[in-house]
Image (cartoon, each protein chain N blue to C red):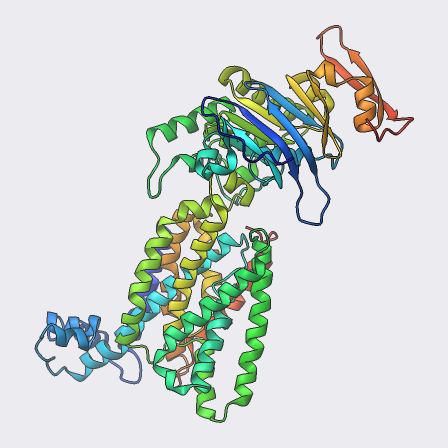
Length: 280
Length: 354
Protein backbone atom coordinates (compact mmCIF):
# COMPACT_ATOMS: atom_id res chain seq x y z
CA UNK A 1 0.00 0.00 0.00
CA UNK A 2 2.96 2.31 0.40
CA UNK A 3 3.42 4.37 -2.73
CA UNK A 4 6.05 6.67 -1.33
CA UNK A 5 8.58 6.19 -4.09
CA UNK A 6 6.49 7.64 -6.89
CA UNK A 7 8.68 9.75 -9.17
CA UNK A 8 7.90 13.44 -9.22
CA UNK A 9 6.42 14.78 -12.40
CA UNK A 10 7.23 18.42 -12.93
CA UNK A 11 4.70 19.07 -15.67
CA UNK A 12 1.82 17.69 -13.67
CA UNK A 13 -0.54 20.18 -12.04
CA UNK A 14 -3.28 19.67 -9.52
CA UNK A 15 -3.72 18.24 -6.07
CA UNK A 16 -4.36 14.63 -5.23
CA UNK A 17 -3.92 12.30 -2.30
CA UNK A 18 -2.70 8.75 -2.90
CA UNK A 19 -3.49 5.84 -0.59
CA UNK A 20 -3.72 8.04 2.49
CA UNK A 21 -3.88 6.43 5.88
CA UNK A 22 -4.19 8.85 8.79
CA UNK A 23 -4.51 8.43 12.50
CA UNK A 24 -3.94 10.82 15.33
CA UNK A 25 -1.64 8.62 17.31
CA UNK A 26 -0.17 5.18 17.21
CA UNK A 27 -2.54 2.80 18.91
CA UNK A 28 -5.55 4.90 17.97
CA UNK A 29 -7.82 3.64 15.19
CA UNK A 30 -7.22 4.90 11.67
CA UNK A 31 -9.37 7.88 10.75
CA UNK A 32 -8.66 7.73 7.02
CA UNK A 33 -8.20 4.25 5.71
CA UNK A 34 -5.99 4.02 2.62
CA UNK A 35 -7.99 6.47 0.54
CA UNK A 36 -7.09 8.23 -2.70
CA UNK A 37 -8.70 11.43 -3.83
CA UNK A 38 -8.12 13.80 -6.74
CA UNK A 39 -9.39 17.34 -6.28
CA UNK A 40 -11.11 18.63 -9.42
CA UNK A 41 -9.28 21.76 -10.59
CA UNK A 42 -11.14 25.05 -10.63
CA UNK A 43 -14.19 23.55 -9.01
CA UNK A 44 -15.97 23.64 -5.67
CA UNK A 45 -15.66 20.29 -3.99
CA UNK A 46 -17.62 19.36 -0.88
CA UNK A 47 -16.69 16.62 1.57
CA UNK A 48 -19.74 15.25 3.35
CA UNK A 49 -20.33 12.48 5.82
CA UNK A 50 -21.60 11.82 9.33
CA UNK A 51 -19.67 12.86 12.44
CA UNK A 52 -16.45 10.92 12.75
CA UNK A 53 -16.43 9.89 9.11
CA UNK A 54 -13.02 11.51 8.63
CA UNK A 55 -14.00 14.37 6.32
CA UNK A 56 -12.26 17.07 8.36
CA UNK A 57 -9.26 14.81 8.81
CA UNK A 58 -9.05 14.25 5.07
CA UNK A 59 -9.26 18.00 4.48
CA UNK A 60 -6.50 18.71 6.99
CA UNK A 61 -4.30 16.01 5.52
CA UNK A 62 -4.66 17.51 2.05
CA UNK A 63 -3.84 20.91 3.56
CA UNK A 64 -0.70 19.52 5.25
CA UNK A 65 -2.02 20.12 8.73
CA UNK A 66 -1.76 16.39 9.39
CA UNK A 67 0.90 14.01 8.18
CA UNK A 68 -0.40 10.77 6.71
CA UNK A 69 1.01 7.56 8.12
CA UNK A 70 1.20 6.06 4.65
CA UNK A 71 0.59 7.52 1.24
CA UNK A 72 1.30 11.03 0.03
CA UNK A 73 -0.41 14.21 -1.03
CA UNK A 74 0.86 15.43 -4.38
CA UNK A 75 0.68 19.07 -5.42
CA UNK A 76 1.75 19.92 -8.98
CA UNK A 77 3.62 16.66 -9.23
CA UNK A 78 5.51 16.99 -5.95
CA UNK A 79 4.94 15.36 -2.60
CA UNK A 80 3.79 18.21 -0.35
CA UNK A 81 6.08 16.92 2.40
CA UNK A 82 9.01 18.01 0.22
CA UNK A 83 7.75 21.59 -0.10
CA UNK A 84 8.74 24.28 2.37
CA UNK A 85 6.02 25.70 4.54
CA UNK A 86 6.15 28.99 2.70
CA UNK A 87 6.02 27.35 -0.73
CA UNK A 88 2.98 25.40 0.36
CA UNK A 89 1.32 28.41 1.99
CA UNK A 90 1.55 30.31 -1.28
CA UNK A 91 -0.38 27.56 -3.07
CA UNK A 92 -2.87 26.34 -0.48
CA UNK A 93 -4.83 28.38 2.04
CA UNK A 94 -6.87 26.87 4.83
CA UNK A 95 -9.53 28.22 7.13
CA UNK A 96 -10.44 26.34 10.27
CA UNK A 97 -13.78 25.78 11.87
CA UNK A 98 -13.20 27.87 14.95
CA UNK A 99 -11.18 31.03 14.95
CA UNK A 100 -10.61 33.48 17.73
CA UNK A 101 -9.08 36.85 16.99
CA UNK A 102 -7.07 38.63 19.70
CA UNK A 103 -8.98 41.46 21.38
CA UNK A 104 -8.76 44.72 19.49
CA UNK A 105 -7.44 43.24 16.24
CA UNK A 106 -9.07 45.10 13.34
CA UNK A 107 -10.30 43.46 10.16
CA UNK A 108 -7.60 45.20 8.21
CA UNK A 109 -4.88 43.90 10.54
CA UNK A 110 -6.32 40.41 10.28
CA UNK A 111 -6.39 40.45 6.50
CA UNK A 112 -2.81 41.72 6.42
CA UNK A 113 -1.79 38.63 8.39
CA UNK A 114 -2.82 36.68 5.29
CA UNK A 115 0.31 38.10 3.67
CA UNK A 116 2.60 36.34 6.15
CA UNK A 117 3.84 33.79 3.64
CA UNK A 118 4.68 36.44 1.04
CA UNK A 119 6.94 38.52 3.21
CA UNK A 120 10.60 38.13 3.95
CA UNK A 121 12.22 38.60 7.29
CA UNK A 122 12.29 42.28 8.36
CA UNK A 123 10.52 43.31 5.15
CA UNK A 124 7.61 45.72 5.45
CA UNK A 125 4.49 45.60 3.32
CA UNK A 126 5.00 45.96 -0.42
CA UNK A 127 2.52 47.48 -2.92
CA UNK A 128 1.60 43.90 -3.86
CA UNK A 129 0.70 43.18 -0.25
CA UNK A 130 -1.50 46.26 -0.09
CA UNK A 131 -3.16 45.43 -3.39
CA UNK A 132 -3.88 41.87 -2.29
CA UNK A 133 -5.42 43.09 0.97
CA UNK A 134 -7.60 45.69 -0.78
CA UNK A 135 -8.74 43.10 -3.27
CA UNK A 136 -9.59 40.62 -0.52
CA UNK A 137 -11.56 43.25 1.41
CA UNK A 138 -13.48 44.16 -1.73
CA UNK A 139 -14.24 40.58 -2.70
CA UNK A 140 -15.58 39.86 0.78
CA UNK A 141 -17.46 43.16 0.68
CA UNK A 142 -16.13 44.29 4.06
CA UNK A 143 -14.20 47.39 3.01
CA UNK A 144 -16.49 49.57 5.12
CA UNK A 145 -15.72 47.46 8.21
CA UNK A 146 -11.96 47.50 7.83
CA UNK A 147 -11.18 49.50 10.98
CA UNK A 148 -13.62 47.62 13.19
CA UNK A 149 -12.27 45.13 15.73
CA UNK A 150 -12.97 41.58 14.62
CA UNK A 151 -14.27 40.69 18.05
CA UNK A 152 -17.14 43.15 17.77
CA UNK A 153 -18.55 41.83 14.49
CA UNK A 154 -21.46 39.47 13.97
CA UNK A 155 -20.60 35.83 13.44
CA UNK A 156 -21.24 36.14 9.71
CA UNK A 157 -19.06 39.22 9.29
CA UNK A 158 -16.32 37.53 11.28
CA UNK A 159 -16.37 34.60 8.94
CA UNK A 160 -16.17 36.92 5.92
CA UNK A 161 -13.15 38.61 7.53
CA UNK A 162 -11.38 35.29 8.07
CA UNK A 163 -12.09 34.27 4.49
CA UNK A 164 -10.68 37.62 3.36
CA UNK A 165 -7.51 36.82 5.32
CA UNK A 166 -7.19 33.48 3.52
CA UNK A 167 -7.92 35.31 0.29
CA UNK A 168 -5.08 37.78 0.86
CA UNK A 169 -2.82 34.74 0.93
CA UNK A 170 -3.49 34.56 -2.83
CA UNK A 171 -3.51 30.80 -3.13
CA UNK A 172 -4.91 28.73 -5.96
CA UNK A 173 -6.43 26.31 -3.45
CA UNK A 174 -8.75 27.33 -0.65
CA UNK A 175 -9.72 24.78 1.98
CA UNK A 176 -12.53 25.51 4.40
CA UNK A 177 -13.56 23.38 7.35
CA UNK A 178 -17.27 23.83 7.98
CA UNK A 179 -17.36 27.54 7.13
CA UNK A 180 -21.10 27.89 7.75
CA UNK A 181 -21.65 25.77 10.83
CA UNK A 182 -22.32 28.44 13.43
CA UNK A 183 -24.10 30.89 11.15
CA UNK A 184 -27.74 31.78 10.67
CA UNK A 185 -29.30 31.25 7.25
CA UNK A 186 -28.69 34.73 5.85
CA UNK A 187 -25.01 34.59 6.80
CA UNK A 188 -24.69 31.08 5.43
CA UNK A 189 -25.74 32.53 2.08
CA UNK A 190 -23.28 35.42 2.45
CA UNK A 191 -20.42 33.02 3.03
CA UNK A 192 -21.41 30.49 0.38
CA UNK A 193 -22.06 33.23 -2.18
CA UNK A 194 -18.59 34.61 -1.49
CA UNK A 195 -17.05 31.16 -1.91
CA UNK A 196 -18.99 30.72 -5.15
CA UNK A 197 -17.75 34.09 -6.38
CA UNK A 198 -14.15 33.22 -5.54
CA UNK A 199 -14.47 30.08 -7.56
CA UNK A 200 -16.27 31.50 -10.58
CA UNK A 201 -14.54 34.89 -10.80
CA UNK A 202 -11.05 34.11 -9.57
CA UNK A 203 -10.96 30.48 -10.64
CA UNK A 204 -9.95 29.25 -7.20
CA UNK A 205 -10.18 25.57 -6.44
CA UNK A 206 -12.29 25.28 -3.32
CA UNK A 207 -12.55 22.27 -1.05
CA UNK A 208 -14.90 22.46 1.88
CA UNK A 209 -16.37 20.30 4.57
CA UNK A 210 -20.10 20.91 5.01
CA UNK A 211 -22.74 19.39 7.21
CA UNK A 212 -25.72 20.87 5.43
CA UNK A 213 -26.49 18.62 2.47
CA UNK A 214 -28.61 21.27 0.82
CA UNK A 215 -25.73 23.75 0.81
CA UNK A 216 -23.59 21.05 -0.76
CA UNK A 217 -26.31 20.33 -3.31
CA UNK A 218 -26.64 23.98 -4.18
CA UNK A 219 -23.03 25.17 -4.31
CA UNK A 220 -20.74 22.21 -4.91
CA UNK A 221 -19.70 21.04 -8.35
CA UNK A 222 -18.38 17.85 -6.88
CA UNK A 223 -19.11 15.85 -3.76
CA UNK A 224 -17.14 13.18 -1.94
CA UNK A 225 -19.14 11.26 0.65
CA UNK A 226 -17.21 9.63 3.48
CA UNK A 227 -18.12 7.04 6.02
CA UNK A 228 -15.85 5.42 8.58
CA UNK A 229 -12.69 6.71 6.97
CA UNK A 230 -13.53 5.67 3.43
CA UNK A 231 -14.79 7.56 0.41
CA UNK A 232 -17.97 5.70 -0.40
CA UNK A 233 -19.43 7.87 -3.15
CA UNK A 234 -18.31 10.71 -5.37
CA UNK A 235 -19.57 12.66 -8.33
CA UNK A 236 -21.84 15.60 -9.06
CA UNK A 237 -24.48 16.46 -6.47
CA UNK A 238 -27.29 14.64 -8.32
CA UNK A 239 -25.08 11.57 -8.61
CA UNK A 240 -24.15 11.47 -4.94
CA UNK A 241 -27.24 12.77 -3.22
CA UNK A 242 -29.51 9.85 -3.91
CA UNK A 243 -31.90 8.01 -1.65
CA UNK A 244 -29.62 4.95 -1.61
CA UNK A 245 -26.40 6.84 -0.89
CA UNK A 246 -27.97 8.90 1.87
CA UNK A 247 -29.23 5.72 3.45
CA UNK A 248 -25.88 3.98 3.30
CA UNK A 249 -23.76 7.01 4.27
CA UNK A 250 -25.90 8.79 6.83
CA UNK A 251 -28.29 6.04 7.92
CA UNK A 252 -31.24 8.22 7.02
CA UNK A 253 -34.28 7.95 4.84
CA UNK A 254 -34.76 11.00 2.64
CA UNK A 255 -36.72 12.30 -0.30
CA UNK A 256 -34.90 14.10 -3.04
CA UNK A 257 -37.07 16.97 -4.20
CA UNK A 258 -36.54 19.28 -7.15
CA UNK A 259 -37.88 22.78 -6.74
CA UNK A 260 -39.64 23.70 -9.99
CA UNK A 261 -39.12 27.44 -9.59
CA UNK A 262 -35.35 27.49 -9.06
CA UNK A 263 -34.39 24.15 -10.52
CA UNK A 264 -32.46 23.41 -7.30
CA UNK A 265 -32.86 20.10 -5.64
CA UNK A 266 -33.11 19.37 -1.95
CA UNK A 267 -32.73 16.46 0.41
CA UNK A 268 -35.64 16.17 2.78
CA UNK A 269 -34.75 13.70 5.53
CA UNK A 270 -37.76 11.81 6.79
CA UNK A 271 -36.21 9.74 9.53
CA UNK A 272 -33.55 7.23 10.49
CA UNK A 273 -32.86 4.45 8.05
CA UNK A 274 -35.02 1.39 8.57
CA UNK A 275 -32.13 -0.94 7.82
CA UNK A 276 -28.82 0.17 9.19
CA UNK A 277 -26.24 -0.38 6.51
CA UNK A 278 -22.75 -1.18 7.57
CA UNK A 279 -21.49 -2.96 4.48
CA UNK A 280 -21.44 -1.12 1.19
CA UNK B 1 0.47 55.22 22.59
CA UNK B 2 1.89 58.72 22.96
CA UNK B 3 0.30 58.94 26.39
CA UNK B 4 1.95 55.69 27.47
CA UNK B 5 5.38 56.74 26.25
CA UNK B 6 5.16 60.27 27.64
CA UNK B 7 3.75 59.06 30.94
CA UNK B 8 6.46 56.45 31.27
CA UNK B 9 9.18 58.99 30.51
CA UNK B 10 7.87 61.40 33.14
CA UNK B 11 7.56 58.69 35.79
CA UNK B 12 11.03 57.39 35.04
CA UNK B 13 12.57 60.87 35.08
CA UNK B 14 10.98 61.82 38.39
CA UNK B 15 11.92 58.47 39.94
CA UNK B 16 15.47 58.79 38.69
CA UNK B 17 15.88 62.26 40.12
CA UNK B 18 14.49 61.19 43.49
CA UNK B 19 16.90 58.27 43.51
CA UNK B 20 19.83 60.51 42.69
CA UNK B 21 19.18 63.25 45.19
CA UNK B 22 17.66 61.45 48.18
CA UNK B 23 19.02 58.79 50.49
CA UNK B 24 21.45 58.37 53.33
CA UNK B 25 23.48 61.19 51.80
CA UNK B 26 20.82 63.81 51.02
CA UNK B 27 21.52 66.40 48.39
CA UNK B 28 19.56 69.36 47.17
CA UNK B 29 18.23 68.99 43.63
CA UNK B 30 20.71 71.60 42.56
CA UNK B 31 23.63 69.76 44.09
CA UNK B 32 22.49 66.49 42.59
CA UNK B 33 22.28 68.08 39.19
CA UNK B 34 25.75 69.55 39.41
CA UNK B 35 27.09 66.18 40.54
CA UNK B 36 25.42 64.56 37.57
CA UNK B 37 26.89 67.11 35.20
CA UNK B 38 30.25 67.25 36.96
CA UNK B 39 32.77 67.99 34.18
CA UNK B 40 35.32 65.80 35.96
CA UNK B 41 33.23 62.78 34.96
CA UNK B 42 32.27 63.83 31.47
CA UNK B 43 35.55 62.96 29.85
CA UNK B 44 36.42 59.86 27.86
CA UNK B 45 38.78 58.25 30.36
CA UNK B 46 36.23 58.23 33.17
CA UNK B 47 33.22 57.30 31.04
CA UNK B 48 35.03 54.41 29.38
CA UNK B 49 36.15 53.20 32.79
CA UNK B 50 32.56 53.19 34.01
CA UNK B 51 30.89 51.75 30.92
CA UNK B 52 33.48 49.21 29.86
CA UNK B 53 35.30 48.42 33.08
CA UNK B 54 38.82 48.84 34.44
CA UNK B 55 40.23 46.17 32.17
CA UNK B 56 39.26 47.96 28.98
CA UNK B 57 40.49 51.26 30.34
CA UNK B 58 43.86 49.65 31.05
CA UNK B 59 44.00 48.06 27.65
CA UNK B 60 43.34 51.42 26.02
CA UNK B 61 46.08 53.01 28.16
CA UNK B 62 43.73 55.66 29.46
CA UNK B 63 45.03 58.00 32.13
CA UNK B 64 44.05 57.31 35.72
CA UNK B 65 40.70 58.63 36.86
CA UNK B 66 40.84 62.01 38.62
CA UNK B 67 39.76 62.22 42.25
CA UNK B 68 36.08 63.05 42.38
CA UNK B 69 34.01 65.02 44.88
CA UNK B 70 32.01 62.95 47.38
CA UNK B 71 28.64 63.91 45.92
CA UNK B 72 29.84 63.09 42.43
CA UNK B 73 31.17 59.75 43.62
CA UNK B 74 27.88 58.86 45.27
CA UNK B 75 25.82 59.86 42.29
CA UNK B 76 28.05 58.22 39.70
CA UNK B 77 29.18 55.10 41.51
CA UNK B 78 26.15 54.23 43.61
CA UNK B 79 22.94 55.84 42.54
CA UNK B 80 23.19 56.21 38.77
CA UNK B 81 24.21 52.62 37.99
CA UNK B 82 21.38 51.39 40.19
CA UNK B 83 18.93 53.43 38.12
CA UNK B 84 20.40 52.17 34.86
CA UNK B 85 20.21 48.56 36.02
CA UNK B 86 16.63 49.14 37.12
CA UNK B 87 15.68 50.57 33.75
CA UNK B 88 17.15 47.65 31.87
CA UNK B 89 15.75 45.04 34.23
CA UNK B 90 12.32 46.63 33.84
CA UNK B 91 12.58 46.61 30.06
CA UNK B 92 13.76 43.00 29.96
CA UNK B 93 11.09 41.70 32.29
CA UNK B 94 8.30 43.52 30.46
CA UNK B 95 9.55 42.35 27.07
CA UNK B 96 9.91 38.82 28.28
CA UNK B 97 6.43 38.86 29.80
CA UNK B 98 4.89 40.12 26.57
CA UNK B 99 6.52 37.36 24.59
CA UNK B 100 5.55 34.64 27.05
CA UNK B 101 1.96 35.84 27.12
CA UNK B 102 1.82 35.69 23.34
CA UNK B 103 3.40 32.29 22.87
CA UNK B 104 1.28 30.70 25.59
CA UNK B 105 -1.77 32.75 24.52
CA UNK B 106 -2.41 33.30 28.19
CA UNK B 107 -2.57 36.61 29.99
CA UNK B 108 -1.43 35.03 33.22
CA UNK B 109 1.89 34.00 31.76
CA UNK B 110 4.99 35.74 33.00
CA UNK B 111 8.74 35.43 32.46
CA UNK B 112 8.84 33.04 35.35
CA UNK B 113 6.03 30.80 34.24
CA UNK B 114 7.94 28.41 32.05
CA UNK B 115 10.34 27.35 34.75
CA UNK B 116 12.87 30.14 34.24
CA UNK B 117 12.68 31.56 37.73
CA UNK B 118 12.62 28.30 39.60
CA UNK B 119 15.49 26.89 37.58
CA UNK B 120 17.58 30.02 37.93
CA UNK B 121 16.74 30.28 41.62
CA UNK B 122 17.67 26.70 42.30
CA UNK B 123 20.93 27.01 40.43
CA UNK B 124 21.88 30.15 42.34
CA UNK B 125 20.98 28.64 45.70
CA UNK B 126 23.05 25.59 44.90
CA UNK B 127 25.85 27.89 43.93
CA UNK B 128 25.63 29.92 47.11
CA UNK B 129 25.28 27.02 49.51
CA UNK B 130 26.86 23.91 48.14
CA UNK B 131 29.68 25.31 46.06
CA UNK B 132 30.37 28.79 47.46
CA UNK B 133 33.44 28.98 45.22
CA UNK B 134 31.14 29.64 42.30
CA UNK B 135 29.89 32.85 43.91
CA UNK B 136 31.41 35.11 41.29
CA UNK B 137 29.66 33.29 38.49
CA UNK B 138 26.13 33.69 39.82
CA UNK B 139 24.68 35.39 36.73
CA UNK B 140 26.02 32.70 34.47
CA UNK B 141 24.66 30.12 36.88
CA UNK B 142 21.26 31.80 36.82
CA UNK B 143 21.14 31.73 33.06
CA UNK B 144 22.19 28.11 32.91
CA UNK B 145 19.65 27.11 35.53
CA UNK B 146 16.87 29.06 33.87
CA UNK B 147 17.62 27.66 30.44
CA UNK B 148 17.94 24.11 31.76
CA UNK B 149 14.58 24.33 33.50
CA UNK B 150 13.03 25.80 30.38
CA UNK B 151 14.42 23.01 28.20
CA UNK B 152 13.06 20.47 30.68
CA UNK B 153 9.66 22.16 30.46
CA UNK B 154 9.81 22.04 26.69
CA UNK B 155 10.82 18.38 26.65
CA UNK B 156 8.01 17.44 29.02
CA UNK B 157 5.44 19.44 27.06
CA UNK B 158 6.54 18.00 23.73
CA UNK B 159 4.15 15.48 22.27
CA UNK B 160 3.95 15.77 18.48
CA UNK B 161 4.77 19.43 19.01
CA UNK B 162 3.88 21.63 21.93
CA UNK B 163 0.79 23.56 22.82
CA UNK B 164 0.31 26.58 25.06
CA UNK B 165 -1.59 24.57 27.66
CA UNK B 166 0.99 21.81 27.84
CA UNK B 167 3.80 24.36 28.20
CA UNK B 168 2.05 26.09 31.08
CA UNK B 169 1.28 22.83 32.87
CA UNK B 170 4.82 21.58 32.51
CA UNK B 171 6.13 24.98 33.68
CA UNK B 172 3.99 24.88 36.81
CA UNK B 173 5.15 21.35 37.64
CA UNK B 174 8.83 22.11 37.12
CA UNK B 175 8.37 25.29 39.15
CA UNK B 176 6.84 23.35 42.02
CA UNK B 177 9.61 20.76 42.05
CA UNK B 178 12.39 23.33 41.89
CA UNK B 179 10.64 25.41 44.55
CA UNK B 180 10.57 22.45 46.90
CA UNK B 181 14.22 21.78 46.30
CA UNK B 182 15.01 25.43 47.03
CA UNK B 183 13.20 25.23 50.36
CA UNK B 184 15.04 22.04 51.16
CA UNK B 185 18.34 23.82 50.58
CA UNK B 186 17.33 26.51 53.07
CA UNK B 187 16.95 23.80 55.70
CA UNK B 188 20.26 22.24 54.87
CA UNK B 189 22.23 25.49 54.97
CA UNK B 190 24.57 25.80 57.90
CA UNK B 191 25.33 29.46 57.64
CA UNK B 192 22.56 31.95 58.41
CA UNK B 193 24.10 34.80 56.42
CA UNK B 194 24.14 32.62 53.34
CA UNK B 195 20.43 32.01 53.80
CA UNK B 196 19.76 35.73 54.13
CA UNK B 197 21.84 36.46 51.06
CA UNK B 198 20.00 33.82 49.11
CA UNK B 199 16.64 35.02 50.40
CA UNK B 200 17.18 38.57 49.22
CA UNK B 201 18.21 37.16 45.88
CA UNK B 202 15.07 35.07 45.48
CA UNK B 203 12.89 38.09 46.28
CA UNK B 204 14.70 40.30 43.83
CA UNK B 205 16.64 43.39 44.77
CA UNK B 206 18.60 46.19 43.18
CA UNK B 207 20.56 46.94 46.33
CA UNK B 208 24.24 47.12 45.54
CA UNK B 209 23.75 47.20 41.79
CA UNK B 210 26.73 48.95 40.29
CA UNK B 211 28.53 49.46 36.99
CA UNK B 212 29.52 45.83 36.94
CA UNK B 213 25.84 44.91 36.77
CA UNK B 214 25.25 47.56 34.11
CA UNK B 215 27.96 46.03 31.97
CA UNK B 216 26.56 42.57 32.63
CA UNK B 217 23.01 43.25 31.52
CA UNK B 218 23.43 45.91 28.83
CA UNK B 219 24.53 43.73 25.91
CA UNK B 220 21.77 41.17 26.58
CA UNK B 221 19.21 43.93 26.85
CA UNK B 222 20.27 45.30 23.50
CA UNK B 223 20.12 41.89 21.84
CA UNK B 224 16.76 40.93 23.26
CA UNK B 225 15.19 44.31 22.52
CA UNK B 226 16.33 44.12 18.89
CA UNK B 227 15.07 40.54 18.60
CA UNK B 228 11.81 41.42 20.34
CA UNK B 229 11.13 44.39 18.10
CA UNK B 230 11.83 42.41 14.96
CA UNK B 231 9.58 39.56 16.06
CA UNK B 232 6.36 41.52 16.42
CA UNK B 233 4.81 40.12 13.25
CA UNK B 234 5.48 36.56 14.37
CA UNK B 235 3.89 37.25 17.74
CA UNK B 236 0.80 38.69 16.06
CA UNK B 237 0.36 35.74 13.72
CA UNK B 238 1.02 33.26 16.50
CA UNK B 239 -1.90 34.77 18.43
CA UNK B 240 -4.26 33.60 15.67
CA UNK B 241 -3.68 30.06 16.89
CA UNK B 242 -1.27 27.32 15.87
CA UNK B 243 -3.34 25.86 12.98
CA UNK B 244 -3.96 29.22 11.33
CA UNK B 245 -0.37 30.35 11.83
CA UNK B 246 0.89 27.19 10.23
CA UNK B 247 -1.62 27.47 7.36
CA UNK B 248 -0.27 30.96 6.74
CA UNK B 249 3.17 29.45 6.28
CA UNK B 250 4.71 29.72 9.74
CA UNK B 251 6.89 26.99 11.16
CA UNK B 252 5.05 27.29 14.45
CA UNK B 253 7.30 25.11 16.59
CA UNK B 254 10.50 26.74 15.44
CA UNK B 255 9.13 30.26 15.80
CA UNK B 256 7.72 29.52 19.23
CA UNK B 257 11.01 28.07 20.40
CA UNK B 258 13.05 31.02 19.12
CA UNK B 259 10.65 33.50 20.66
CA UNK B 260 10.80 31.63 23.93
CA UNK B 261 14.58 31.68 23.76
CA UNK B 262 14.51 35.46 23.28
CA UNK B 263 12.24 35.81 26.27
CA UNK B 264 14.51 33.56 28.35
CA UNK B 265 17.50 35.64 27.35
CA UNK B 266 15.77 38.81 28.45
CA UNK B 267 14.43 37.34 31.67
CA UNK B 268 17.51 35.49 32.80
CA UNK B 269 19.84 38.42 32.18
CA UNK B 270 17.51 40.43 34.42
CA UNK B 271 17.45 37.63 36.97
CA UNK B 272 21.21 37.46 36.86
CA UNK B 273 21.71 41.04 38.04
CA UNK B 274 18.70 41.58 40.27
CA UNK B 275 17.33 38.24 41.35
CA UNK B 276 13.71 37.25 40.95
CA UNK B 277 11.69 40.45 40.80
CA UNK B 278 8.09 39.35 40.55
CA UNK B 279 4.99 40.76 38.86
CA UNK B 280 6.73 43.27 36.57
CA UNK B 281 6.66 40.89 33.62
CA UNK B 282 3.07 40.02 34.40
CA UNK B 283 1.62 43.47 35.06
CA UNK B 284 3.36 45.73 32.56
CA UNK B 285 2.06 44.02 29.40
CA UNK B 286 -1.45 44.21 30.92
CA UNK B 287 -1.28 47.90 31.62
CA UNK B 288 0.13 48.67 28.20
CA UNK B 289 -2.32 46.38 26.42
CA UNK B 290 -5.32 48.14 27.91
CA UNK B 291 -4.17 51.42 26.39
CA UNK B 292 -2.55 50.47 23.06
CA UNK B 293 -4.29 47.21 22.12
CA UNK B 294 -2.84 43.82 21.38
CA UNK B 295 -0.88 44.53 18.19
CA UNK B 296 2.65 43.65 19.21
CA UNK B 297 4.54 46.45 17.52
CA UNK B 298 2.76 48.95 19.71
CA UNK B 299 2.60 46.64 22.69
CA UNK B 300 6.32 45.93 22.80
CA UNK B 301 7.34 49.54 22.25
CA UNK B 302 4.93 50.53 25.02
CA UNK B 303 6.36 47.87 27.33
CA UNK B 304 9.91 49.04 26.68
CA UNK B 305 8.91 52.40 28.15
CA UNK B 306 6.44 51.35 30.82
CA UNK B 307 8.54 48.49 32.23
CA UNK B 308 11.59 50.60 33.09
CA UNK B 309 9.40 53.41 34.45
CA UNK B 310 7.51 51.07 36.73
CA UNK B 311 10.56 49.33 38.07
CA UNK B 312 12.53 52.51 38.80
CA UNK B 313 9.48 53.95 40.55
CA UNK B 314 9.11 50.79 42.62
CA UNK B 315 12.79 50.95 43.49
CA UNK B 316 12.35 54.50 44.84
CA UNK B 317 9.85 53.10 47.31
CA UNK B 318 12.01 50.08 48.09
CA UNK B 319 15.02 52.25 48.82
CA UNK B 320 13.48 55.26 50.54
CA UNK B 321 10.10 54.34 52.05
CA UNK B 322 11.51 52.53 55.05
CA UNK B 323 14.78 54.46 55.32
CA UNK B 324 17.29 53.78 56.69
CA UNK B 325 16.29 50.18 55.96
CA UNK B 326 16.12 49.21 52.30
CA UNK B 327 13.66 46.51 51.34
CA UNK B 328 14.19 44.43 48.20
CA UNK B 329 12.35 45.97 45.25
CA UNK B 330 10.77 42.57 44.61
CA UNK B 331 8.72 43.04 47.77
CA UNK B 332 7.37 46.36 46.53
CA UNK B 333 6.49 44.96 43.09
CA UNK B 334 5.00 41.89 44.72
CA UNK B 335 2.71 43.82 47.05
CA UNK B 336 1.72 46.63 44.69
CA UNK B 337 1.77 44.45 41.57
CA UNK B 338 -0.28 41.74 43.20
CA UNK B 339 -2.84 44.27 44.38
CA UNK B 340 -3.04 45.86 40.97
CA UNK B 341 -3.43 42.50 39.35
CA UNK B 342 -6.38 41.66 41.56
CA UNK B 343 -7.91 45.01 40.68
CA UNK B 344 -7.55 44.23 36.96
CA UNK B 345 -9.09 40.84 37.50
CA UNK B 346 -12.11 42.22 39.33
CA UNK B 347 -12.66 44.95 36.80
CA UNK B 348 -12.68 42.79 33.71
CA UNK B 349 -15.11 39.98 33.26
CA UNK B 350 -13.22 38.11 30.62
CA UNK B 351 -9.78 37.48 31.93
CA UNK B 352 -7.02 35.06 31.23
CA UNK B 353 -7.44 34.30 27.57
CA UNK B 354 -5.65 36.38 25.03
